[in-house]
Amino acid sequence: MSVRIALFDDNRNVRESISLLLQTEPQFEMVGVFSHVLDCIEDLQACKPDIVLMDIEMPGMTGIEAVRLIKKEFPAVQVLMQTVFEDDDRVFDSICAGASGYILKNHLNIRLVDAIKELQYGGSPMSPSIARKVLGKLQSLPPSAGKEAVEDYQLTPREKGVLSCIVNGLSYKMIASELQISYETVRSHVKKIYEKLHVASLTEMVAKAINQKIV
Image (cartoon, rainbow, N blue to C red; front, side, top):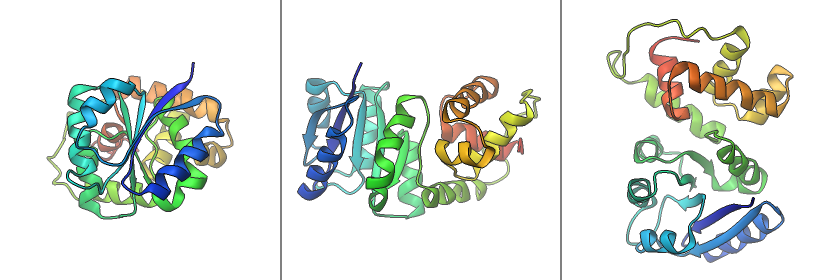
């Protein structure tokens, strides 16, 4: 079954480049390409995507505002933010709005296909530089923020190793290389970590790992 993808970006060259890039992947189907987000709910109702590629800076309404609307109306749709910004507040606001992943625009050619595949399999891809900023923001929160009772989650040493890599901003492919295991094995470990930590997103996983000093 193909992965249905919708794209929101006000730059025509970017829209065309992404469309051409994703057309080379037979498992991806571009079902909608839009230059603004003012009608994003109606647009998604019409094209029914699995994944949305969203530019943060959009005319009339920002991509962050659009993500809030999209996640409220279509909670199952995964949103990958595209940004030229490495601004802490923008990235953190995107997380809070419900985005599932983040990628810098200058990484699109080398990272976009893998990032979409990570989303497809339950991951939350981030460009390493963005991941570091998100983690820095989480670490700057007061100790009581998100604090939960200490609990033994019974993570295996390998699962803790994978979790440590995620906390440090590594992608699934980078984790596989770092730990000398397969990409599919990384996915399997991450799925088990989600279950053991009782979390539903990478952001929640990282926040719990940091706040409770799991790794």
